Length: 372
Image (cartoon, rainbow, N blue to C red; front, side):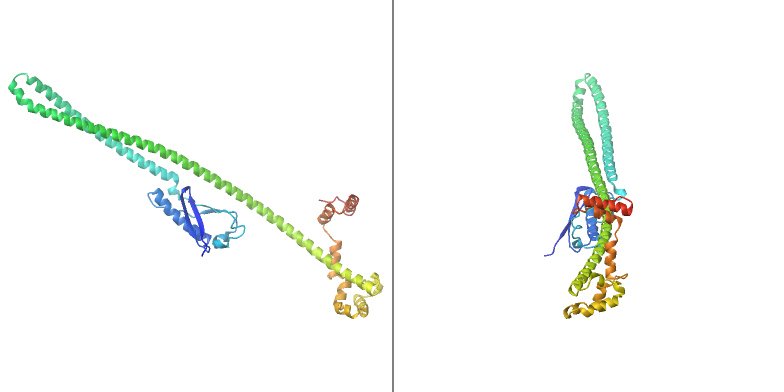
């Protein structure tokens, strides 16, 4: 069964996020490319801008400072790298910022409001025309009413016209009510648009607050990363210094310990073959190293002679420059002031009297107090 790696990208708002499954051998660059494509599609479907956009490349904030990590498979991010949190921020093009989107929505609402106002003005014009017709009909009715008092016959003849007039008035009343209903509906639509605009303004402010919060968090993370980098640089310098000191002390101790091995061998030769220690030092009795090696070699028993050939005996006795014994002598008799001061300061096995005496001896030899 192959192992899947899940990655999630978030664009300004958690609702505009996308998660995808990637193979372990996918590189970080390929993962970011796929997230960018999917978030671009998500954005265009959700916002529906006037023209589709393409998100810019991501800015990555991470604790790891190695640039080559982005070209390595995800499966290679082991140890401290795999424990890090990677924050991926995709930026919108300047032509499709949140302010531009909201401005486009406001423009659409303004156009709808203008159209509604024009329709309302047209309806008012129609209503004024109907009222004018009704006034003319009322004037005609008054004229007919005066004429009806002259003769019954003529009044009976005008009765159908009055009936038609009453029917016309009823029709105009129905039309007037219909117009009023339309006006009320349009007024409600305007009110709804204004309420929607208020809700959108609240949503805009909420999103702006969230963006500000995210921006503050990103700045805070950037500041923390900067501090971590500075701390890492400082630790790296300290580690290099400590490593150099450790290497120096290790070299000195190894040289000193090698001389101890040579001293142990010289003491055994002295005890086993009745040599005085002074006789086993170069220059003793005017003998050279070669003469000393020859004298000692002639007295060795068979078992010791197998181990101590002339080269080994020369190493034991020879203290000329560059030899193993010389290097041990240098390590035993040479140290930096810092090392000598530390040896005095951290001598827990010393008594108080010994510590005081060492400090005074240091002042006598170096004309200053030990620096701890």
